[in-house]
Image (tube, rainbow, N blue to C red; front, side):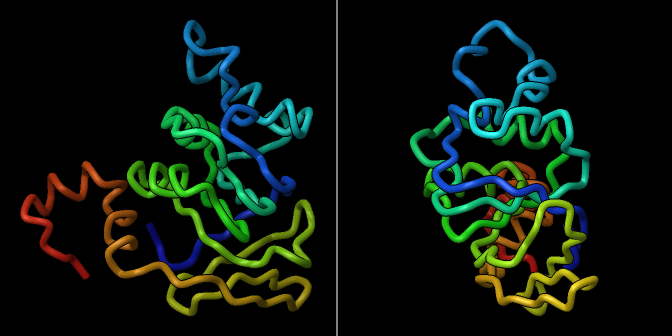
Length: 168
């Protein structure tokens, strides 16, 4: 994980739960590629078809509520999601994302528009749309979480630091 993540914004609304992102109607029986091709169809028809790898999902409040489904994060990885920014996340989803190496950041997404080229600066704790001069603070991630993300998730982190040694 780098300190600066850039990519186009893909906007979603409030209260997007993991059942709409990774629909239970496809589990079990369908592979991740199939599920990723249908991601978010219940809340944003066609979203998976227009999303491009490296994109940043800018969602409304409570992204990932109502489920502890870890497959949701796997599907987001399969889609190539670089990061998710939202004012708030479901706590289980937030932890699953960190544990699986997906950057999730709490921030105000007001002013972001679909297709904006977004730059997330983790060092400066800021999200920006350089082309429009928009800059907003983001909730800083603790160094421990950034260390876990840098290694690709909790399991790779513990393989490298089995004694939970803090790597800066």
